[in-house]
Image (cartoon, rainbow, N blue to C red; front, side, top):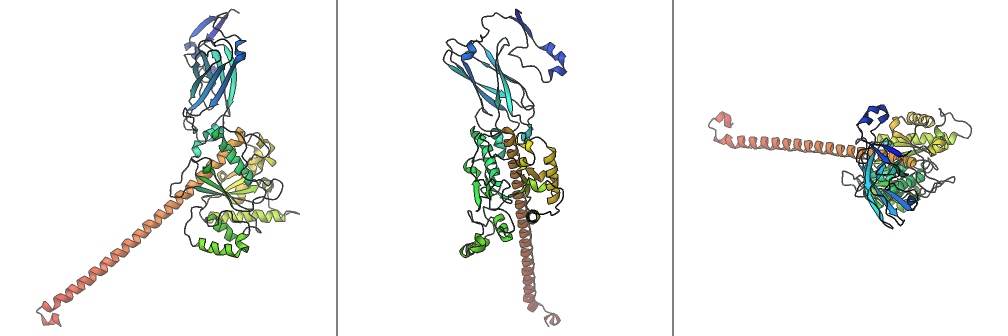
Length: 475
């Protein structure tokens, strides 16, 4: 009761990873015995006036990070007491599945003053590619030089802080990638946009919910025109536009409108049905159709479906479901038409939390119900399972959560990859056509040169005929 046995020291690293599997490794750590009544031990009453603030920097430059990069935490100690803090204390970060353990010393803080230190942490693996490998929070401990614990606290991490991997710029001359959201009314397209923007809001250290897109909720869809949401206006490093239009149904959407929209020839803010009923607008469209390419051509397409429509195994029409089945088949027809044009549409199962309630709290975990829905959707649209995602959007929340942000990040990251693949395929196709054009031009020049050479040779022979002495040859 009079002495404390301390294993290790602040100058050494903390206990090795999985030390309980190798207990003999503890023998290599230094041991020291410290009396409990030492004067430099922190008194409990003193720490009532000490406040600690921790800020996640991700990097020392306070910029965004990517998965696998070194992380940094700014620790600020404020002393409101009338005595200085104890000499030499340490901030220890406990290891987790993503980050290694780390520590940093804190110098004594004078009365009424504050002190700041930066704690740099290395991940276990540098080749981290999935957001699910990230931990939602880290645990830190304030200890004295003799190992007495003074304070424990945790810091929640923001998915937006790790969104540097979303920084993208097209390879060609186009300024932005364009993502088009298609789907029936009430499947969560508008709330999906708000969820994406809310997740990216974490770049600014904010956790508030963004409501840029007006959500319909239980009422019919509130989107009646083609709208663009430019992410680069808020985050210049992410050159992506998200486009939303009116509901994709047989009555409200024509195939001509779909093709014009995908080709980027449908004007922004075009109203629903305007291309079919407005004569002046039709004349404008005829002029736009003559353009070969536009900067608003779509590079990725997300087709939203309601989770309820895939709860059953078959498409057997029951009473009151004929219209739903018809619209579901129309979505498949649109999907196949877009696939035939070289696109790789992504299927998004909207309002998944209404079918699987557990998603709202554990969005990144695997749920049997959702895996069944994904397999049914993949079979229905005849695509691989990797191109079927589900969405859990913010509706009534006031702050973002780590799990829902992670799911939004995962979907946006995959969508950007699809856009890059589409652009690369377009560039390859242009390069192939350019090579064919050069070959054709080269063959034309070769044929022209042969023809000119032949004509010149014939002319030379004719010119030499009078000089020959043989009458037979002259005749």
